[in-house]
Image (cartoon, rainbow, N blue to C red):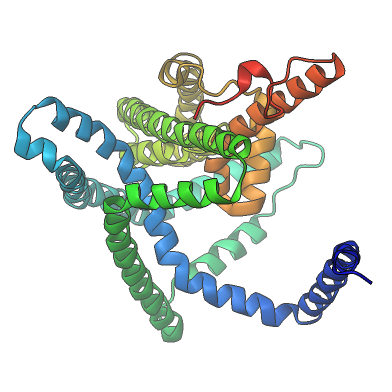
Length: 392
């Protein structure tokens, strides 16, 4: 048998060999699942600070880019030459000032609200029992709230605040210390990632170009660029919109004389990062708190005010900020958020919209490609429709 025939025979048997190897590996993984999940968990524990460092660097890079453009326009040679370092320093100074503002103004206000709630807890408790008795007196079919069950739940909740369980307290302290260390490591990592981002991007581009065809390289670069733009636009939009919404809600609740106006306004601004579900859940929490602390009438007024505010935000403010960047149907948005939350929790829900927007573009490109093949033409050299071949 010639060398060529042996090589051809080997190539014909290679897929079967790889399939058998894959089956063996899959069997071992399933058979020793706890062992492999333990390894993955340990590896993830090691790389977690660097992963969050990458996320932090990505977020910080958004304002850094704007500041670098402003520094470039100064035309001052010293500043232009060191625009990267200066932009990072300026952003961290701004973040430090915001953090100082939170520590000195917002946290004391939140602490006052929590202290007020604890001091008035007996009153809120009595109001809750009155509401329950009133609902039960209506004799609504299928609705009968047990007062004994509520009392037991509250007693169990208060029991968890006991200081007797010192072991839990120590474990919590250790967890907090570990979180602080991981956060510090993520912060340091983000600085180095920001400093080396051009080299990192150039290296990844070089590797991708070396192992893929020109068409595949152009396709990947085009759609990763779109994904990057989508993420930046989404973070920018939701941050600005959250600040606007949180400020408006805080003012509205102050007018309604809610003692928790600032706390609820901040909460609504934060949960606004999660489309649809975030604002709905945040509004419901705000309505419930106002109802139980200020009465059902004020709660009903709050519900109307928040509904109007959400409509103005969803139909006027958000569309102006986004500028049509994410042309997704409400159904697709809800499905995306649900799947993203199931796969990666809150981060998955936040990242779902930018990712699905790009996947939608790719799917539409595939449909156009298939239509072009079916109609007998219209494709370029790389197999992409002529009008959609990425430049590069």
